[in-house]
Amino acid sequence: MSNWIEVCALDEIDEEDVVPFDHAGHTYAIYRCPEGNVFATSGLCTHERIHLADGLVMDDIIECPKHNGRFNYKNGQAQGAPVCEHLKTFATKVENDTIYIEVAP
Amino acid sequence: MTMRDYSLTGASSRLAQEQGLASATWYQTDIPRKTMKALMKRSDGPAIRDTAIWLLCLVSFAAALYLTWGTFWAVPVFLCYALLYGTASDSRWHECSHGTAFKTPWMNNSVYYLASFMVIREPKVWKWSHARHHTDTIIVGRDYEIMGHRPTRVLRHILAMVGLPQTWGTLKSLVRHASGRLSPDEQSFIPEMEHNSVFRTARIMLALYGLSIGLAVGFQSWYLALIIGPLPAMAGVWLAYVFGLTQHAGLAENVLDHRQNCRTIYMNPVFRFLYWNMNYHIEHHMFPMVPYHQLPALHQLMKEDCPPVYHSTWSAFKEVVAAMWQQRKDPEHYVRRELPQTPTADTETTTMAAQTA
Image (tube, rainbow over the protein chains, first blue to last red):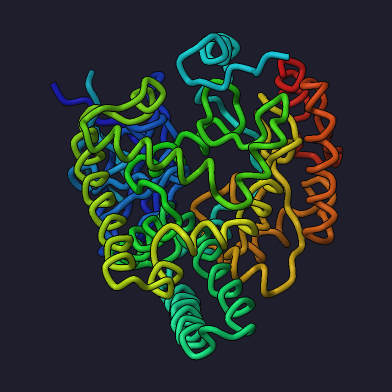
């Protein structure tokens, strides 16, 4: 069963940027890629649990603001030291200029 | 007097974790997101320019040493070359380990490995130890890069000015890693999946140092020995060591506020070039993904939220020496930095942590 949660308006996220989103005790990072599409991952770096929403988005990459750990936010793949564990990703959709993510019920 | 336990697997480590000092949340100056994004933005230009100047200076002084060989002038020429080799490589190693100097990853990696060879540091091991240093800055039992161990061992610091303990330590660790072993401390911060990479890199580094020494011996050339390998690194490390001491030594241990355990110092342009702006050390630790060339701008934004800046390298270094001299006999002594009363300052957290030091 899908569980779509409203995040924010689409224009609240700049292109090539990320915002944090907290829901039910979990933190998520919501991205808009340079082409404008929306993606979502778990919000904390798998290395030292730093908030990725404070990091820098460069093309398909989110860089942790603390240790230079990099992930592809479209598929969650860790790009090398100091991150070894991939990020969890979540489905997103945009309806009526509002962003939703699908989380476990 | 017994040394504090700075190991990463002993009582201090357990205490740091029990007190919530490990992987903790640190104080940050409030800077708008758009401004921070602009500061973190990467570019290749400044680092290409500065690396080209650095390498050109190295080649020029190496040529000058060749031309002045056998004269008095060879001595000052070599000392300048050694500073570019042993001190400037330290800051290049550091910035590229953060992946912030260049926008292009292969450029960062190339300069990182070159500088690691020059400064005699294992690139894989130090990548992980430096990540820990930024997670748990000057937290006893967690940070592997604390230079100002208490009580102060004066002789060790004097020898370190010519690189002896560092070079000997790296030689031992290279042999240990080349033979497929890690120390318990290293195992605590290097993930298992990286171990083989550490071992392989150590073997390559040993081969390269062996080659550089072998060439000098084979050609019976002091010139080669002074141009590449351990000798220029050791002869030129003293200024990097002075810079390194001014970063944290003599300040508080076990606090969760970089304004209390880092120094920001105004330095002259030559030092800032050699040091790649790491004199803005509070700024660097609070926001480590801001490239070195943006640190002066970041400093302007947050200086009102920080303790007073040291106005010269000398003013910071003499404070370090005085504090460390006192710490020979009194390991509890440290320099307390006065924090400004700004709206964002969370002095309660930092004071609580300081009391555990």
